[in-house]
Image (cartoon, rainbow over the protein chains, first blue to last red):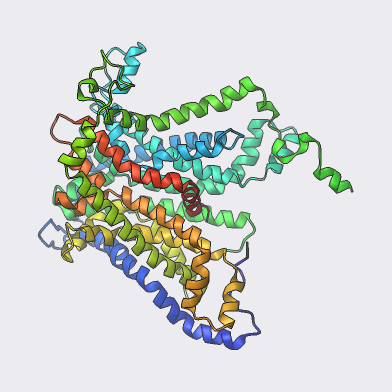
Length: 314
Length: 300
């Protein structure tokens, strides 16, 4: 690995250096142009436009007027909105904790010596590769009210008497969508953490065990601290994507029953697109931004700590 | 002499024989490793098995759990697949998905190669900040962008066309590809570029003749990952596309194959299976590229 910390051509070719520095910014500008056009036009501008739309009463097919904070004032009194905030937080919290715990567990298992290790690793990542909507359809069928294979199996085993109403009951529906989300999220966490685990030198474990550390102590005082930086980043991504989840809910419950599984993203869609209230939908989306910023800051400090730990610069 | 002795140390001190002896008893290993692994693999794969079994099950067996074991098929049928391919717009959706994914992937790769090279190697004023901004752009989720984007797409007159998707998918593909390629470019030695510069090569020649050939693995990783991301995209496709002939597979299957209260589970699962197969096949050929691009984005 070459270190990029000493950029630029060598000093002996000073004239060359001068020639570059003159053209460097122009060249950089030209090279950045294609990406910049897309990102400014379809990312930065919409982000700003979204904030603006949140302050207007725009509907589909009708340009809106500036109405100040009215959308937000309306949402303040909207029980469904607050329910969706509550749902989103619970959904994110429970699903992320489960994804982390199960993902770490799976990563530790895969880090052992195993036959067909790379095969298992490939298989395990499948739920993450397949389009969410399509795997969610499979879950929809698995959660069917009458012909659920889960209910049938449990009934055969004599554990329950009648089919479970997976998606019709508020509590069951929440558990079901969280389970489906965890199912899809475990591979990402597990494979990323596995990559982190493989960078931990075995000699550290060895030294610890020579000093008499139990397996638990080795995990707690060697593996975990070494893994912390990557855990921070992986979990930030995981939290970010869980918090803004849309597809799974849209397929499985569309927010029902009685809004028990409405997330902020699905509510924003429902009010904005089928409901036609673009302004209100945008306001709900904007309300997600503070949470996202918190996650990003968390990620930022996670990254910083990693570089600092490795003795790197900035 | 002494050091040599140590490197050829007894088994117990070899790196790979590390203090795992507590796990070496087979019964314990089964309980601690193989059993949980088996459960994980079963749970993670069961939905796919269920999808596949349902897709080839005759309708008469589909809900008749009394006479047929639901876990198996007696006399599999191609009826659902036949229905899917010849009596629905599925082939059209497949074509749309391929077209949109390929176009947006190439568009994104093109923009990302230049951007990554500029940030990593041209080092213009503010390159570092730009790199950070691109990373932040990767963290902006589609669920907060789709409403304003719908507004924009409508106003520039590409609403309900494949172009709407081809132009909006790069918003999440470019940041990802750029970030990944930056990592690859960083690992290419400076000296190669320097000597080419001294020999009078232009930046464009350096990029084309030196950097790109060396970054092929990175380009493949970024490309197939971007392809998968656009194949799986849902919320933009759902919002920007209205007419059936322009839909992508995820949207088409969900909005057109699900009708009323009677679900045609066979056709639905066949649709889900066939919509997943292309990415799964791609994935099976490039597992290592996938893993490296997924963990690469996290590790940088």
